[in-house]
Amino acid sequence: MGVNDWFYPQYELTRAGWESVVDNAREGWQYTGLRVASIVAGQELTLDELPVERIIVPLSGSFEVSYTGSEINGAQRLVGRANVFEGPTDVLYLSSGLGAMITGEGRFAVAEAPTDEVFPVAYIPRESVAIEMRGAGSTSRQVHNFGSPASLDASRIIVCEVITPAGNWSSYPPHKHDEYVAGKESQLEEIYYFETAIERGSSKKSDVDPMGYMRNYSSPSGEIDTLSEVRSGDIALVPFGWHGPCIAAPGYDMYYLNVMAGPGPERTWLICDDPAHAWVRDTWLTQDVDSRLPYGSLSDMN
Image (cartoon, rainbow, N blue to C red; front, side):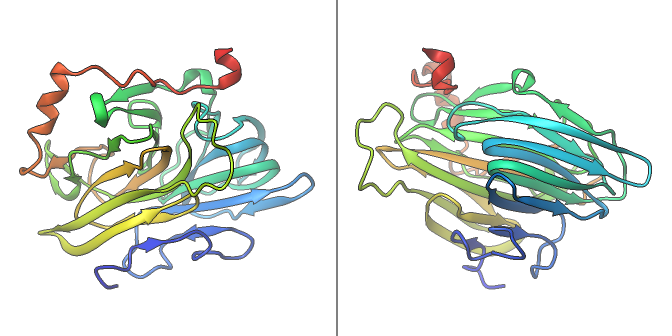
């Protein structure tokens, strides 16, 4: 893989009924996976029984998940949301070795990590999702921590969602997690799946092109050079390197789903800030969180 070969526009990773598939079939990729699809009523998509743990995340719409394995089977309804900017959603963690059939109407993602370890199936309703306001001022963003080590028992996988209001920067200061340093840094691959939309509250509804930007640059662990304009459905892979910022352009909100996993002895998210920019964190102490946050369901706010 070249230094510029880690960003994929929507539909570039289409495979077997899925809009996008990331897995270890891609050169240089080992520890994480992602599937994204849209389905209509009467349609179904299946997940094979593999040594992979998964988290099913509705992006828009609601779904029924029927899951089976050698020793367990069950079903769970996931009450979703109108879109990713309307706060958290129900999610479902599936143990390694389980297969599943997904039906419903809307758009969903499946975060994955290869593992032989088996943990209990876990349904996390939207009301139980831990919501974090990270940063301050123009670096304010909203994080949904349903797949963090503090929120979910799992083998390898770490998953969260981030909403960045128009004009703000997230994944900032630039940071890395590409080498294991006990108690200081994790070694984790990371997937970014993006969606963008007209800024909440805007009266402009047509003839628009919601977009933002994402940056990933080289560290001692490897050479990479991503500076990409991003739109809904685009995917960026972070095998190593300093990554950030993700920038929501003025007028357009940005969402991304993060999927992380790695070979380290602990399932933990420990990062190292780029020393040239780490000082920015200290400025948050004298700033307020962006007053536009939190984003939630518009119907709930009426």
